Structures are given as C-alpha cells and as structure tokens.
Image (tube, rainbow, N blue to C red):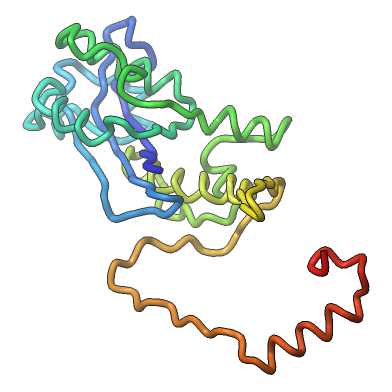
Length: 232
C-alpha cells in the first residue's frame, strides 16, 4: 500500500482569482511506514503573492524568481504521485489548486482524481474528534507529534508532520487475520514513536517453543476447561 502525504503553499486562497501554487511537499508512506522518499519543489507562480499568504508561509516573490514553473515540473510530480493514495489535510483546497494548474497546461492531464485516490485527513479528524480543533497544530498536540520547528507553514514540513499524525490517528484500525476471518480493532490511539524504514536493520531472530514449553502450554489449557477456544 503506497500513500503520499501532500501539502501545498499558494499565492492566495482562490485559484478562480488567478492564484497559483508556489510550493509542493510530498512524503511517501509504504505499508504504514514513512520512507525516506520525498518530493519537494518551490515553483515560480508568475504572479505576485498576497500579503496575507506571505504572512502564513513567509515565501517571498524574490525567492521564487529563479524557480521553475509548474509546467517544468509537472511530469516529475505526476510520476511521483501516480497510482498512490493522496492524504491531504483539507483536500479540496490543495486538489482545487492542483487541478487548476493541470488545466492551465493541457487537458491531457485531466484531474488529480484520474491519477490518485484522495483521502481528506481533516474530514477523518473531525469524525474522530467532533467539536474540537482539528488543524495540524492541534492534531500534533493531541497525538504528541513534535511540531516545534513549525514557526511558519511549509509544504514539506507540514507533509512530514501530517504523515506522523495520520499514522497515529489511524493506528487503531488494525486488521487481524485469524482462521481466515478478519476482525477490525478500532478506537485505539497509538502514541509510540513512528520509525522510518531502515533497510539495514538486522533480521529478527525467531525463537521457537521447546518441547517443555509446549507441554506446559497444553497443561495450562487443560486447566481452562472445554470452554477455552484453544481447546475446540
């Protein structure tokens, strides 16, 4: 299962008013583990940044002057996210901007939903925590994710934080397969540190039960009687 946690920064709030994307940050999750595979790009929006937007992310017009345009990076970006499930906090905002950028280039790209499944982590958070604040800062505090570096919004940093929040927020949705049946264990928040994939980690040692262990186990089951599931 490959997921991409995605965030963007923009020149303003409405693509219909000509606002553009200026930064995209992506963090990869494979089989519920954050990998080292990321995609990050600043983009020249070919227009001025609103003062209100600058106060949020601190990215200036001057900084973006020598950055590539969206049309220059779209192929690389789409290749990175293609076929993955996108996890986005307030997905309609980011997807609206991405679809707007794709439409400005060429109709051949279609929409993001033509290439990826989309999950809105804000909707998910509101379902789990109704009536509470569910912005990224609030979720970091709730799930004990360190966001001390987040003085301003930044697409890659916010994607990294959201990736850890998302894994902790969905940590209780564990599927157990026993005897061909699946049981979902829910409503259990996992707050232990999330570790990134380490390709050099040693193979775990398997210690099998001895004959004496198996005999002691069988005796213990007898004490539980016929009502014990393991005796059936």
